[in-house]
Image 1 (cartoon, rainbow, N blue to C red):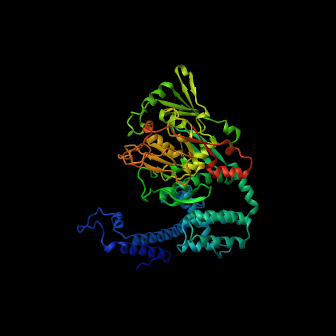
Image 2: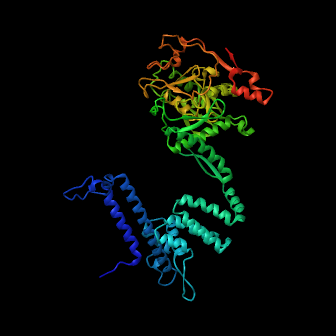
Image 3: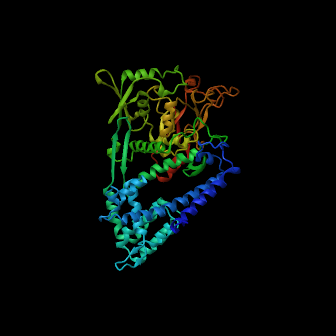
Length: 574
């Protein structure tokens, strides 16, 4: 009668725990697709679908424990293979046709060489040793070995700790090494590989303070950034940054990504109030608390990061505080005059507004430094951005028109627009003012729209794109912005309230809507009457405002604060 080896007992116990958890997780003990005729088509997913939520979690925990027990045995076996593959005549790996124990293990496990190498190194570090006299010695890292054998640690974490202890061994005392090993093994019960990696970096700096600067120099020397355009027209950025240079990049991108994620979850997030303080505002929901499907977040996390980097670049190009070389840099978009005229004709007022704007029109444009052409619609949208100059070409590439910065809103106008919109004016966006652009409601190129406050609105880069791409109409009614969706997004074209509504309007006076006539232009809340800009002919000329010279250039700091906080310094002009 055979007996079970003692080393396998923990593994068998773990298998029994998985079986018990599996059976107990089935609701009513019945499978979803149980077949009284013994169908052979059943698989594990059938059982999983019939498990309770609590039962499913118990199964997951049991499987995790089983996986750790398998790791412990695999490490011991890998060490045994390595001990018998030392280049002697009876080398085990070579007898099987492999150059090393690591190659043999990688082939039998179906893993890469790196993964197999980690298994072998952990096995060597946690296996009992033998002295020259044959005396049995404890493992090089005994605390780690005990945790691994007891199923309290994964192989991945054990490899991180073992590699660190070996690396620091010559620069730390025995007591320091023992303390570090015990600390990391204890913390490994509560944090995963990422957490252990962070702890290792701090421990290494503590145990070897003289090595921090050389490691920092090595990281700085390894920094790099490559930018290339692939065959599909995508611009690929591959970068590696040391902590000093990478921190501001990561912080800026994470700030924008975090804001977008909070908005999409409908959680409150501080937004800039009229006095520059923080005002909690519910984001991602409409007035009734429900997410509006026509304005909700649809981007993936990777797309949000990409848009964040684009927004940062656009703001840098437009900043007056940028270095001289950056202030002089411009993105030039070229388009033939014929293509521009064709695309503008397709956007005439009688065009079907239910069709996304980017899907209408023809022609293409090119961008300096980019070989892949873009659509005429994209060129028009880029022309509305800071730091992008449109260049219109006639026959024989004659330059007919070169756009200038006169299309851009002044800093004073941006301040006034920010007072009204509080950041991105898109419904429930709430992106802070520092990450928005001033957008022409009546387009600069297509509509000859003026660069004044009555025709301006603050939008983040992503929602600026959506306005152009989907064909949304924007209407300003006093201090309130309204966004009317195209028919293909909302057949009723019900306007959505935009902006934070926390600040006063840049215009200090306006003509009220005619009482008793709810369908009049300027009352966008009426269902089916979006009060689109093509109704503007029925309205009186808008009265807009700008900031007075005294408000722009006050003599003292308190005057500057009053100019920012008190819109009484805004002068009305026609």
